[in-house]
Image (cartoon, rainbow, N blue to C red; front, top):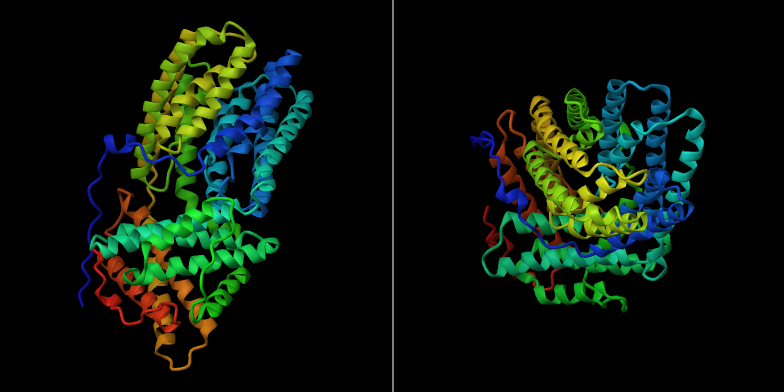
Length: 557
């Protein structure tokens, strides 16, 4: 059979789509409240002591409270600790550099290098939002803070103390709802599976609904695997619910969407876990889940290797933006550097979207700053309170669209520069506008210049892995006496491979300059893989009505 290979679509530069608002995240209020709880005590203490000029160092630690809100508490403890260490380490490099040289060109270059390293490490570790941007914001600003070597230990100690407080703030909700993150992840998987099942019954199923549901189920499994042994009983109950979500994906016609949604609603509360009846073969399903605990994590260097293009884009873009800002005589080139660092996403299309969002959000944010700065100049206490309000607003809104959160981030960043002393508002506004435009323009130009030619290679590898996983599963299905655990492990491997294939295909499709992509082969591999998954759950006895015909499922590309 001759496989048709499609060339990537011509690059499009959408504007309206980039600014479209989405639904707020389910727990939008948690990072918003956490950052206020983490930032307020240190800032208010410094205000009482008359040393708001030191707030940058405490905020370095306090802003770590923004991370890891979707992770189970065992994993959150580790992630938050690593974020604090990474923040303090980057701050140390910045402060030492600032104390050793006054060359703005050297400082910009070091800031660009730090931004690239932070981007690569955050992506490799999958720390989640806000990613590298907060780290780069703090370290870039610290590079241009007057500093001496003797002051560095004290400033780092302040960051460590605030980081320890942020760690406590991030872990505190676990005292009231210790299994909240894994319950929430399971509820999201059930809701997504119910949406796909309902669409399938209505004849409106698509690869989009199925891919979204499969990604949600896979994310929920990863969340459960990170819970640790202390929650073994709860994890086991949640795994049984995830089995139902997987069955709904494999055979949506045999699924009652309302039942899945009812379970999801129960999980979002604080009540007991929903009770589900046993299905034949479910013990083997859960035994297969246990085998994933033994799968080793990929070494760091293997996770960093695919990130070299985005790290190169980040370094080049930040360096160009920072040096251009210097050439224009702007006093705070780190604003341009941070603007560039915030742009880089999984592919060029998403990077363009972020550039549009950043520019629109920053320009509107400057207008907000112009409106509130007279109030802030009345007293330093009002300055602190306004910053706290914008901290809350940024995290409450950014989940709907990045530009909306930037409307609050921008005035907050401008007000922070006035902690040491009140400054000329017109000059601040002008410099921020110039740095935003310079950073966005040159940052995106760097993304165009550094092409990711390996996106096609990654897609080929993901495609081969999915095809091989399907073949292994099909061979086990053909065997008359396949071991239940082996069959379940093969099924889960295939499900993960299909999720990875879809994510890789989407990322590759957003790169503009590359060879033709095997789009038809990807579609065929996904269709064959999902048919094999359906056959596998039937073989395992996980569907109560084996008479339905999953081959006839209407899935429209």
